[in-house]
Amino acid sequence: MPAAPQPDLPPDAGLPDDVAALIGVPQYPITADFDVERSYTYNTCAATENANPIYWDDAVADEITGGPIAPPTTMSLWMRPHYWQPGAVGEQVALQVHFDLKARFELPEAVMTDNTLILHDPVRPGDRISHQQVLRSVSGPKTTKLGSGRFWVIDIEYLNQHGDLVGIESYTGFGYRRTVDDSGSRDGGAS
Amino acid sequence: MTAPKLLLGRVSIGDNTPELSVDVTPTTVVLGAIASRDWRPMHHDYKFATQRNGVADIFLNTPSQAAWFERYVTDWTGPHGRIGRMTFRMRDSVFPGDRMVFGATVTDVRTDDAGCGWVSLDVTLTAHHDGRGERTCTTCAVAVALPTSDDDNPWTRRGAAWTP
Image (cartoon, rainbow over all chains, first blue to last red; front, side, top):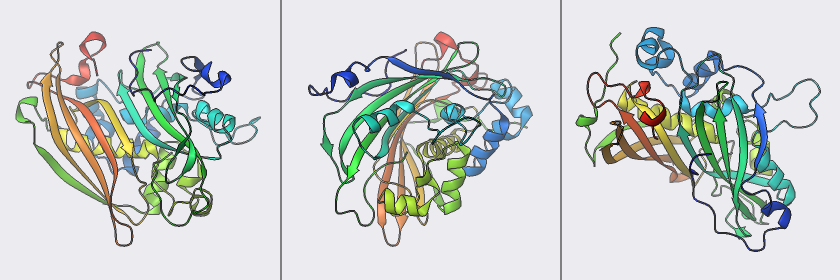
């Protein structure tokens, strides 16, 4: 994997051995359940009122991007599981390493605080995207306005069906247990 | 159609990009979550967001914020602008009832070893709300490639010619 997009967290000497053993190890190599399709381009552009003609006008797309592409920042959506599918048990989640860490540290809540995208070859309708997740670092125990827990950084590498690098994404998550005073708005990110 | 083309030579450090103001509704949040296939309940279920997560309302998810930043930047560059790198920090959440205001300043203009023209932008997403006041929710650093001439097109770059 190319250079990491986000800096590592300060090392935690007290990190449990089983978690430390996962750092730097590719996990959950998965190929998407479905091909890239234009309907999601329209959904994204509608949601953000994005009139960029490369997404709406095929002549412009042909001229500028060599044909239709998906908005580059939608890279992660192709790897998100269906909400339900036959045989699936329980909630289907993306970014399984994040949920593994929540469970391992018994932290019921989590938010994402930082996100980095490094964008390489455009994603095109008909592509089939694959990815793998790599835990980069885990902080020691921290307390914020949200509660007490740990931060972690997870990198994701996205490839298309030709093995070409589509992009690299990095998330910093904060898994936490809420404090007792929990009324009103609070600082935090998104998920 | 001839698409507008912002050339690298027309951009200078310190330039400010036009503000974008958007009133956020529950539909804004839910549309963004569905478009990004994010089924987590804090992006569509008010009770889950407020009672379980302890936040003020459902809130804009991470991929939606990325898509809004992309839209904001490429509104300015035109369709030839190609984002190579985006890093953002979410300090506070964006809720229905907020007015999102995007603004940006050019922090760098350069041409790399492969001849690709790059502009760096510091983008800020500020939320305005009568009750919650004005909050800087997200700060975002973007590197976007721009054509260096009328016959240059960053979208044609691959491999060693594209180093975001």
